[in-house]
Image 1 (cartoon, rainbow, N blue to C red):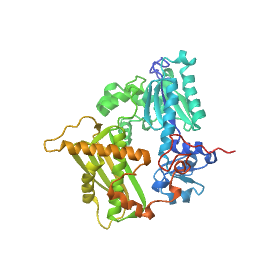
Image 2 (cartoon, one colour):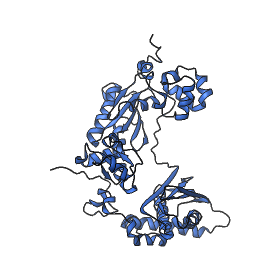
Image 3 (tube, rainbow, N blue to C red):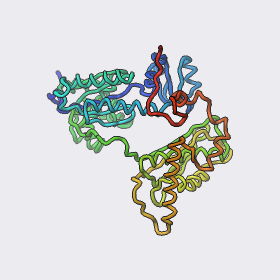
Image 4 (tube, rainbow, N blue to C red):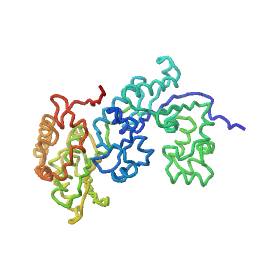
Length: 437
């Protein structure tokens, strides 16, 4: 006996999820055609696999695997440094293509987009399935990468569908087919159901998504609370989560890390690396016209053990000079003599708009204003002559540690293959493709 349909409406809302396949590695393959079909791994600068192509995944390469392990199981692997600037450019083009078809698009992550195409059939002269397929083909034709598309009634269902037939998948779940589709989907495929939730549901005899949505609503509420009820509705085709149109410019935390090889036990060098992280983080903070009220730092030892500490400021700040003493103090508490460190990092949180400053009772307003003006000058000079042209005196020593500077192989090709007028740090926001002639 066939289960009763959850709904007879094909698409009361038409929500798609577009997910780029092996995004970072695919971008590298798109830029250099000679890499197509080969196992490509990014993350050389970190000494571990950050992302990998499907060819590399088939060889057994997994995220976080060390380079020597990769070479052992996949001798033909092409290992490249991560070019996040170019990946970001591709991401922006990806978003732009989706927005040609619908303004209701949500930048879910660097390589994922949710979009509402409801009501656009007449405009695009086709069904919702045809519109979704056009988006897929346009992305693949213009960017040279593959993308998997899921189309259904809600965000949760669309995300399940996009994962179904990767890579280059195209899965549509209309409402009248929902009950047939969900009986073959395990609960661990639902974004929002972690391992503990999946085990808990299994103990109640719920192993598929159809098992879950066939339960009464109070079952979901009692067992999983608010999120359980929300997903119960979403998985039944009743949209709860809206498409968020605000672009991902409002950052709640901002961080910078630096991994260096070989590991070092030199106090001044490790401290300088942390302060350079701080400089980079505050440059980005000011670029987004934000300030931070909480600062956390951490140091990672050569055996990957990590220690950290955080401090709350009396008010938000975007001045590198103003907080450098605080960061140095945190470093003094965390650093242990004799330990070898391989990574430093800083995380800024409690971010807020950098507008009018509320001074405390014992603060010198003139000094605070002066520090803000210094930050503006630093940014202007660095924008003109390159990042870190003006920097803290305590980071000067980084230039003397040549063994930690890396070789040219750890630098992305976009930084080395410059156009006329560009330099290592300053270049146009366009990628460079390698074309066989």
